[in-house]
Length: 123
Image (tube, rainbow, N blue to C red):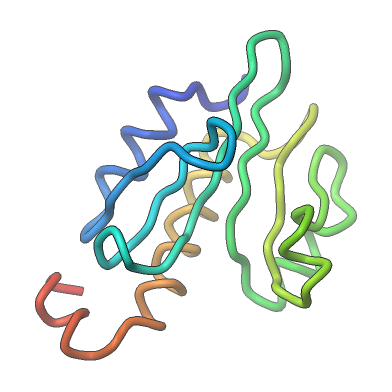
Protein backbone atom coordinates (compact mmCIF):
# COMPACT_ATOMS: atom_id res chain seq x y z
CA UNK A 1 0.00 0.00 0.00
CA UNK A 2 1.60 3.33 -1.05
CA UNK A 3 1.84 6.45 1.10
CA UNK A 4 -1.22 8.68 0.93
CA UNK A 5 -0.88 12.41 0.38
CA UNK A 6 -1.72 12.97 4.07
CA UNK A 7 0.91 10.46 5.23
CA UNK A 8 3.52 11.93 2.86
CA UNK A 9 2.84 15.53 3.92
CA UNK A 10 2.73 14.62 7.62
CA UNK A 11 6.03 12.73 7.44
CA UNK A 12 7.88 15.40 5.45
CA UNK A 13 6.39 18.15 7.62
CA UNK A 14 7.67 16.37 10.73
CA UNK A 15 11.28 16.64 9.59
CA UNK A 16 13.17 19.67 10.97
CA UNK A 17 13.34 22.97 9.08
CA UNK A 18 10.89 22.03 6.31
CA UNK A 19 8.45 24.02 4.23
CA UNK A 20 5.78 22.88 1.79
CA UNK A 21 4.42 24.28 -1.45
CA UNK A 22 2.13 22.90 -4.13
CA UNK A 23 3.49 23.86 -7.55
CA UNK A 24 4.40 22.50 -10.97
CA UNK A 25 0.89 21.33 -11.82
CA UNK A 26 -0.11 20.06 -8.38
CA UNK A 27 3.16 18.57 -7.13
CA UNK A 28 3.64 18.50 -3.36
CA UNK A 29 7.15 19.93 -2.99
CA UNK A 30 9.04 19.79 0.30
CA UNK A 31 12.12 21.89 1.02
CA UNK A 32 14.52 22.14 3.93
CA UNK A 33 15.77 25.60 4.87
CA UNK A 34 12.59 27.60 4.25
CA UNK A 35 10.77 28.63 1.09
CA UNK A 36 14.04 29.35 -0.70
CA UNK A 37 15.74 26.25 0.70
CA UNK A 38 16.73 22.97 -0.94
CA UNK A 39 14.14 20.59 -2.38
CA UNK A 40 14.28 17.10 -0.90
CA UNK A 41 10.98 15.54 -2.00
CA UNK A 42 8.42 15.97 -4.77
CA UNK A 43 5.21 13.97 -5.11
CA UNK A 44 2.26 13.79 -7.46
CA UNK A 45 -0.97 12.22 -6.28
CA UNK A 46 -3.61 11.51 -8.91
CA UNK A 47 -6.80 9.60 -8.14
CA UNK A 48 -6.66 6.09 -9.54
CA UNK A 49 -2.88 6.12 -9.99
CA UNK A 50 0.03 5.05 -7.82
CA UNK A 51 1.66 8.17 -6.33
CA UNK A 52 4.89 9.30 -7.96
CA UNK A 53 7.28 10.23 -5.14
CA UNK A 54 10.68 11.63 -6.06
CA UNK A 55 13.68 12.03 -3.76
CA UNK A 56 17.44 12.52 -3.76
CA UNK A 57 19.58 9.42 -3.14
CA UNK A 58 23.16 8.45 -2.34
CA UNK A 59 25.40 6.85 -4.94
CA UNK A 60 24.76 3.39 -3.47
CA UNK A 61 20.97 3.85 -3.34
CA UNK A 62 21.08 5.10 -6.95
CA UNK A 63 22.71 1.85 -8.07
CA UNK A 64 20.16 -0.22 -6.16
CA UNK A 65 16.97 1.68 -7.00
CA UNK A 66 17.40 2.86 -10.57
CA UNK A 67 16.40 -0.56 -11.90
CA UNK A 68 14.19 -1.73 -9.01
CA UNK A 69 10.68 -2.72 -9.98
CA UNK A 70 8.32 0.23 -9.43
CA UNK A 71 11.20 2.73 -9.30
CA UNK A 72 13.07 4.68 -11.96
CA UNK A 73 15.54 7.52 -12.35
CA UNK A 74 13.44 10.63 -11.74
CA UNK A 75 12.24 12.23 -14.97
CA UNK A 76 13.92 15.57 -15.70
CA UNK A 77 16.33 15.43 -12.74
CA UNK A 78 18.15 12.23 -13.62
CA UNK A 79 18.50 13.32 -17.25
CA UNK A 80 20.51 16.28 -15.94
CA UNK A 81 22.93 14.10 -14.00
CA UNK A 82 21.24 14.42 -10.61
CA UNK A 83 20.80 11.26 -8.56
CA UNK A 84 17.08 11.36 -7.86
CA UNK A 85 14.77 8.34 -7.88
CA UNK A 86 11.03 8.17 -8.37
CA UNK A 87 8.88 5.47 -6.80
CA UNK A 88 5.98 5.45 -9.25
CA UNK A 89 4.41 2.02 -9.62
CA UNK A 90 3.78 -1.30 -7.90
CA UNK A 91 5.48 -2.80 -6.09
CA UNK A 92 7.64 0.28 -5.56
CA UNK A 93 8.94 0.94 -2.08
CA UNK A 94 7.15 0.03 1.13
CA UNK A 95 5.98 2.88 3.35
CA UNK A 96 8.85 2.19 5.76
CA UNK A 97 11.45 2.16 2.97
CA UNK A 98 10.04 5.33 1.45
CA UNK A 99 10.17 7.11 4.80
CA UNK A 100 13.84 6.07 5.20
CA UNK A 101 14.72 7.42 1.76
CA UNK A 102 12.79 10.66 2.35
CA UNK A 103 14.64 11.16 5.64
CA UNK A 104 17.99 10.51 3.92
CA UNK A 105 17.07 12.92 1.11
CA UNK A 106 16.22 15.57 3.72
CA UNK A 107 19.62 15.04 5.39
CA UNK A 108 21.49 15.33 2.06
CA UNK A 109 19.63 18.51 1.13
CA UNK A 110 20.19 19.98 4.60
CA UNK A 111 23.91 19.25 4.32
CA UNK A 112 23.99 21.51 1.26
CA UNK A 113 22.67 24.52 3.18
CA UNK A 114 25.03 27.19 4.49
CA UNK A 115 26.35 26.42 7.99
CA UNK A 116 24.62 29.50 9.42
CA UNK A 117 21.26 28.34 8.06
CA UNK A 118 21.75 24.82 9.41
CA UNK A 119 22.60 26.19 12.83
CA UNK A 120 19.58 28.52 12.84
CA UNK A 121 17.31 25.56 12.02
CA UNK A 122 18.94 23.30 14.60
CA UNK A 123 20.23 20.90 11.94
